[in-house]
Image (tube, rainbow, N blue to C red; front, side, top):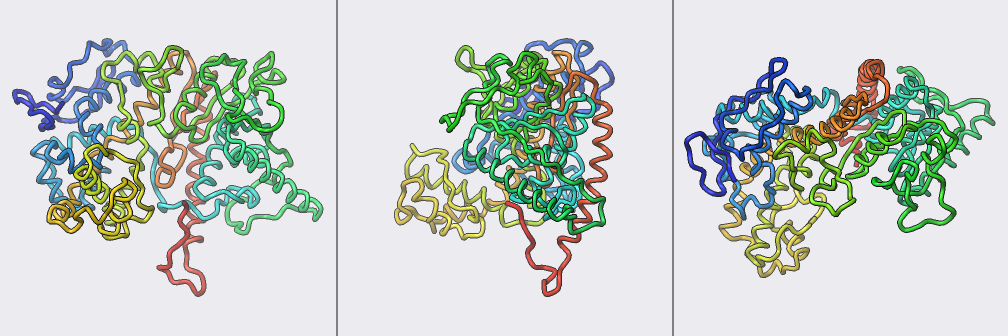
Length: 569
């Protein structure tokens, strides 16, 4: 294991410096040149000739080459910072610059905007540049780090029970599905993993689409139906008064009136391995009432032979790949729009016979040596890069949380070497505590008595003084997180492309408050018109939401300009 430099032996467990020059834009038909150190990594089998590869395939191959070089960094658990001496495994030329870097300088390295007075080694700059060049663009994280308290694009009745982040997401994804509906002449939508039905409710009541909401948790389905009934009752009252209440703010174009068209709720689990005519399994545990028909189970695909659109808003783990497989197998599905999450829950090899893999899906990625992603790597792909950058720029107290946990891990392993990587959560506001208080909360969760652990020793103090190194190490991992997510999403896109479908990856949500913001769209017809219209929708939405935010955050009478505002959970 290690990063090799030409002509230099690598000590076990040490990542020696790789003198690379980064990834440069490749001429047509050629892959970007590999860093010289790549030749010393685990030698891959010959890949298809570059001229036989599509740009997405070349990008996937380049990502795997980069991840192979920095695999020790990618697979490291930050809680092992002291127990595994992770700092000593960094390239020696990187260590002085990272150890002396301020949080603001680390933020500049993370986003490629430079930093005040930073002087980085060229090999570190090359690593950062290569990671940024290979990751999919995540859109412009403009505006506030928090969404508007209330979205002006949603009818007031559709905002009830919906947090600001979710309001932003359902409005954007709903607009995309509306565009897909218009492009495919398909008005039926099946929302998989519908939860409390917020997206389904907006699609049905707000956009007038025919929606089937599928959810395996009967409690969430019950809540969704209750919320639907509340909304129908409010609509009835408004009709009795002869009007629908307008939104409070009218600077932006008014939202459309609602239609009394509730979604249909189906209790069931998606079966990833079943034929498309056997789309759903009963909920587990089974709920009351008779099992509903599969939304794709009729003679022509859906219950009455019509086509449907499939969607999943942050479909967890294997649910995302299952949606794509059902789209590929079912002629009844005209298009799919998927935002994934929880990549660490994806099924990877080895699996028992007959169990489908969540990654890789495509033959292209599966054929690339070194494509495997560890649990730790897939977990890293779920990180919120923009949020971490904001903490660095602001010098947030949250930055000490990783150091606290790494020190606690060292104390636990010293007291009981058999206890490793326990899922401890000493509290949501642990960063606001002193370390002794933090340890008194955490040690009992590991079955240890704080009285028997020396919390005021010189060794504990020495570890706490290395918080800046822990933060720097985390920053390097954050650089690779979008690259891993890009590989996972590229794999899904290539899977669909291999079967002849039209695909696009759209940075649909603002990444500052919706980190999993890339939505994979696929259809049996071209998508250029849909994507072009979305660009205009996004620009219009950003400007109006920023205006709402300024209004929401402007101090009111009796409120200090520095009073804490609403923070979404």
